[in-house]
Image (cartoon, helix red, strand yellow):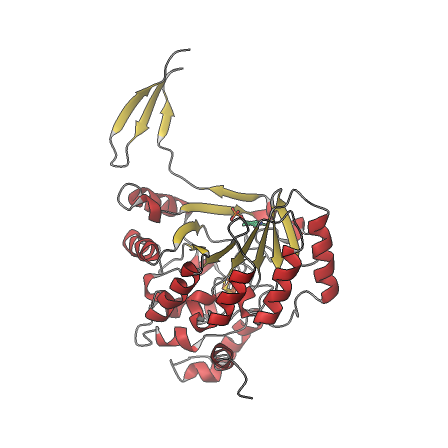
Length: 359
Ligand SMILES: *Cc1c(COP(=O)(O)O)cnc(C)c1O
Ligand code: SF4
């Protein structure tokens, strides 16, 4: 029994039922809440529970992880497979949309289930994840596609796997010479920082070197999520040579505010995490109450441009439906006047002329 590691014990102690949740906050209609959990289950880690102010119904972390009846309201534009993962899946558990990189779904389990999850139709415990045969087939696929030089382990959350399971993935991937970079997409450094153990660090170092790095892309959405335990977990990763970046969605009532995002991006830069993408929310079913209009997102980024240090500014992007790919959403600063004359807006709103040499 006691050969479980502390992070595994923490996982066992997550809040997973409506009755457990009721110990923290009043629930008006428990049956309705259970209905919500049929679409996507509940899990809140003990670490994240500690960061929630349950006396504030608008606490940003609470809003991200406590189910709401609003999740049962579907709007017509919402999709089961919002970014078309399935349309570009040549073999099970793999999506190949861009020429040089593939996604591998290592598990569909997560330590904490985010209520806005874009893969909410898949995340949970029902799907056991890739079998040995699936994993063999994935390695074969990588070998027969030498144009792919990067593998992204995603899910679900790959860092909920055991070290031995991760080592199996690392061994397989490193056996394919054309793969240079391994990337792990994970919210574990946010919700379960104790999982970043010394043994995990040793593992990561064993399977990376100066030209075969491991990148971790994590998922902080609000400055309140950066607690001392998180800072320690990130520091361990960065000290071990892991490049850590951050991506996450723009969320209504949670981080759709330039002041909050400025704090988030700067605190991330302080702890050596590079803000990478801010996502326009995907059209997953029952997430409408989290969605911010695209225009508002563009305006927020425009406000931050010039005000916030460039090393802390992510790109605002939209992953188009039907697997069509990611595109930056950006205010247009440039306007061409003549063949050689441009009018360009400064970050402070002035209009500046720029003339190109005539050729
Ligand atoms: C988002 C995504 C990637 C990664 O894209 P980057 O811009 O490199 O972060 C890769 N494959 C698929 C299918 C994706 O959806
Ligand atoms: S960690 Fe990612 S995959 Fe898991 S529930 Fe949150 S958004 Fe979904």
